[in-house]
Image (tube, rainbow, N blue to C red; front, side, top):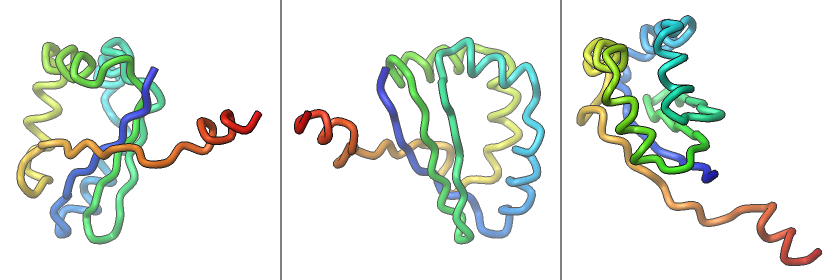
Length: 107
């Protein structure tokens, strides 16, 4: 399983509502994410709207495709699209440091 990290940009004027919407995500959306292979999924939001997400998945593209195939994701995405600058295009970041991997080299 691989850890992925991505960024998005939330419109600064929509930050509080974005936070509120994530306080109680629909149960069917939570189950769909789990069933699509999203593990340890977390979102972090900076005051200027930078959103950083992390998750574990076997294959991010496959996990995204599985979500795209669900009706609940289509409903969620339609409601959330208005919050983002430049749409909902994930910018996946490259991992440049991993403590456990480097410690493993010394053991």
